[in-house]
Length: 385
Image 1: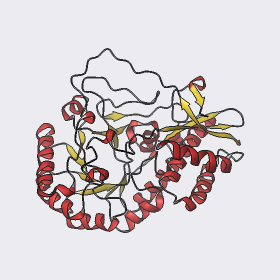
Image 2: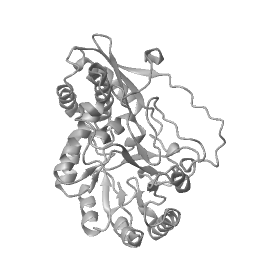
Image 3: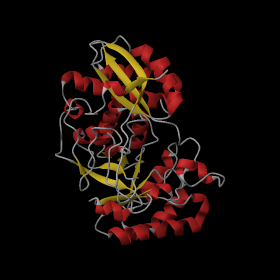
Image 4: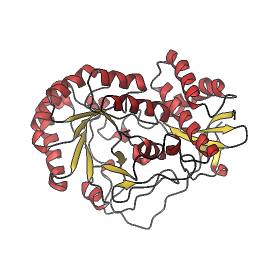
């Protein structure tokens, strides 16, 4: 079955309405979070106000010659749209839509000239996910079956949220909190992080997993001083403490602070970046983003690299989207999945993509429908011009 077209499209998603009144506004609207750009004080500590964080997600529709179609989603707006339309689509149209490994390799090879990461890997992600959705529909199987079948009955999730009381009420038993301080703040920043972690432990206790996500806002010196100070709080991991290029620094932290795991990967794109992390012993947990780092095909290759080294692969934001749910259902060394919890406390959870299951008591079972089980009708898909 040949590919007839690969197009960036707009999807009319249903309005999510509720009569419930929130208990309060979500942490995501006001929690101060350190990120690389707000090293400079002119930039906000609220991510939604930082330049570069407002690029839209985009949808990709891949159609086979018999009219069957699949859809995928990726990030970063217009630059990615241009790459799909001008580089990937002309390369793949007319080829066998079932030969995903071959198609993936074609995209990878044409991307080398563009750096094979960033815009290129993000564009690759949207197309790859659409191809998996299409293949599942053509074979009338859920994607996790095509990946080898389920390896667990359900997926255990951790909640990424500073609304820990709300996360507990929803049944989560594993939690990841934000990071309020940048390394430039020195001792005052360390005290602020300690207070944040201490408050979290007071809410969830010491019998639950707790993680923290600095989002590339530490340097090695700050990280090591902080990790020594928070050692009594028994954090399961510290996530992406350094910028992605500082792999030697990650390895140094991992060696000098062996009581806490190093998790990283959302800003490392493609299998080669993760092979480097593993070979340099710079990470304990690999966290590729399926919408940025090459798609499902690359994520499964990254999982194999990690599995060979005894390292888990837990994709960034995996449980919020059908793509990550199907990965987690089929990947042996993926013991949990991240659910980013940004809804207002008191408002029932809803899926951003129709047909995507939501956690119940901290667990998710992916859709058994063909492909990724996304419930979008063709009438709701509009081609972008």
